Amino acid sequence: MKFDEYTGQTVFITGGASGIGKAQAVCFLRNGANVFVFDKEKKNVAEMEEQYSGQFTYALGSVTDKASVQRAVQHALHKFERIDILLNTAGILDGYVTTLETEEWLWDKVMDTNVKGTYLVTNVVLPYMLQQESGVIINMSSIAGFVAGGGGAAYTASKHAIIGYTKQLDYDYCRKGIRANAIAPGAIKTPMNKADFSGDGKIAEWVANQTPAGRWADPIEVGELTLFLASRAADYMHGVVIPIDGGWTNK
Image 1 (cartoon, rainbow, N blue to C red):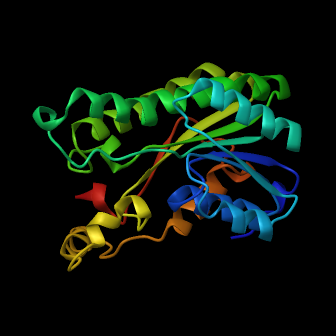
Image 2: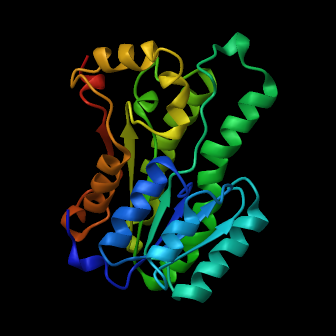
Image 3: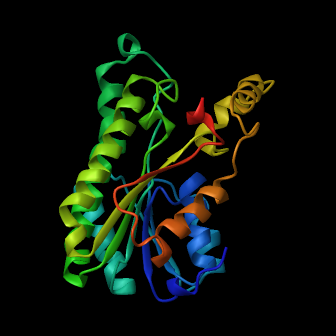
């Protein structure tokens, strides 16, 4: 998928060192955008930096640490002068545990990363977008934001929260040039889901069989959806949540 409009634009991606975030970074880089990745892990970013010299840079840190977020945003602005698109992609799973199996530290960790992290990064980036009178924010929800069974108690609660946050964010700022939407992936073959493919891979096989499309998706498919959702072609889409789940939520 090719978009000419991204040349010269800057995309700030959390969790962009692997999985869906990395696929999003690659998609925007291939379409001429400047990309800034903020992640706890350094893996994979060196190869992107080498391949897209001058077009890509990164900072290490956690979305749960406001000071780290502020430093990363300043780094991005110093390097590229503006942030046009924010992709709040960083997130963690909870092991599919029920509420009685969810210890308080796990609940806090999932909520801090998935929900508070999205809030913290958005609140640091948003004032600059408001100064520009333009900006696109795409948050990462999940099929677990619609239905049960896509995660445990904490993860499912966090992804429902992301949907509500996204709708309110767009409602509050759309008249000021901001457009906020969310993506809700289903079975995407990423490092976060590697446990499903371990051993004899029976869990991964079961998930594929339970998905109407009969397969897992590649992260690049989510990256390409992101390209469209951030583009001018989607300018009238506000506060929507787009499933990319092989028909899972049709069931």
